[in-house]
Image (cartoon, rainbow, N blue to C red):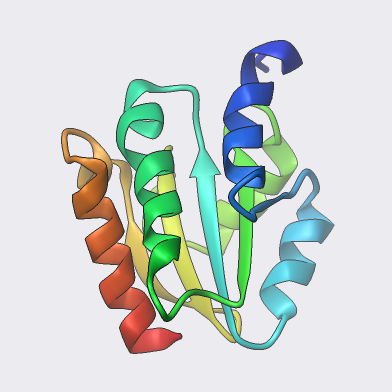
Length: 136
């Protein structure tokens, strides 16, 4: 577990962009039960989360079509919530950071760490925008 003071700015970066932080398994389950589209970001302290994933997912929200619900769990902090989110991302292996789009509770688009690492935020945003166009 990471100290709260370390992760607080990383959580707030997404919360300030409209994401709701989920901390329990029940919160994740309830979020995925909602009708429509839900974007879940598995946040992380790693450099690719800071340099690509968080800026990319935030930039993706500037387009016309966006998910109905934006939520995040923090790997290494919200262990229970992260485990439940990852269970819903199967068949993809656990990855952080990761960004998953669900439609009516079904996984429809996934960005794993290897899709994020080493790519600029603009590429992440464009990938997500294309998924929003298709599913939102």
